[in-house]
Image (cartoon, rainbow, N blue to C red; front, top):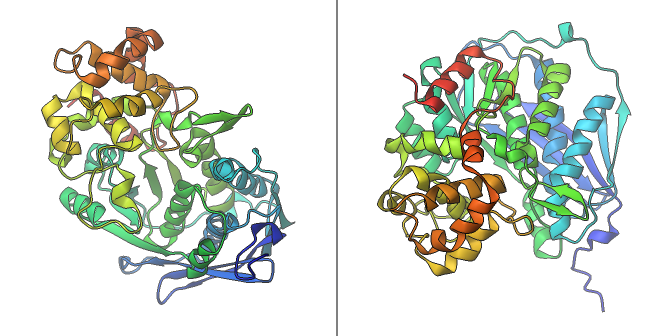
Length: 453
């Protein structure tokens, strides 16, 4: 017998992106959605930090940025039922804008689809009134300018912050954990705080049968930062995303599924074009660490010892119900990966002091470390390329203080068969990807990453 109180995802035909508005007095954006005509959602995004006085607000630019955030943030509600059709109401999208959002609802939700036994690629249809692109001369916004660096609490953002300190960046965080606020305070730089509040109706539906899973959160945070440029007046957004994020996590029936899709170079290029062609060509977006691997970034971070006791990349510490004092759990894929990246550049004692436990001398951790190098079992987490995990393990197998630990003793030979010393050197060097568009930022990053003074 069917339970009338249960939510049936299969009964939903259409996800509706209904309307949005921005209240200038409270600096709050309201994003409204619906599943058919039965379930409604309202999300708010509040720019909590008071902007400097006298910043002119370009209402047209703000509305353009808000429109794209509205569609992208809808992935959080669409996934409750994942119906075949998404309808964007009240506003139109050009062909290139439509393709940008189609990719988010397909590539950005493939991990969600796999977790819920839905087909990939996603065959979602996005319907919106067609519009023509607006000329660049009509999009440009006058603003004071400046650089903002989103901070998440991990090693990558701290490396970027220290690299560009002399440029005078501001930091930005969405729903910052107390740990992130502590790290930002440690830098001595201004932190812009933004609060994203999901509709409580979403949690209620999850409790009675709605689907759930990973969404392209970096895309949402990036578009919040784009919207924030019209509130705070900065004209450059430098993400701290490494080149390793572009590797697929799994192949599912030959289709690439990437947990980090909205951190990939493919997505960065799409968003950069969207910002330039549809929001404001004077606003720069991109990753200032894109030319570097996780291994190279870890080497640079190993020298930033002042942050070693404070930073954290373990998702346990950042879950919604985490306590303020939560830190590394020491037994998840993120802890293992970050530990593996740092280990070649630290002593076992120094790494144990960071993580809080000796992962490498624990036999129960061997399988988890092996998965980081696996074609079939790479975890759906923000972890780097298989070959750089193998490269780090190969490096450890050459270090007397590490090569007799349980994990390295078991996996060292496998790693050495996967990568050569030449591959290790290649991973530690910058690749040929274009540098960040602002040469001051790009050169500052290169100096820190190479250890130049």
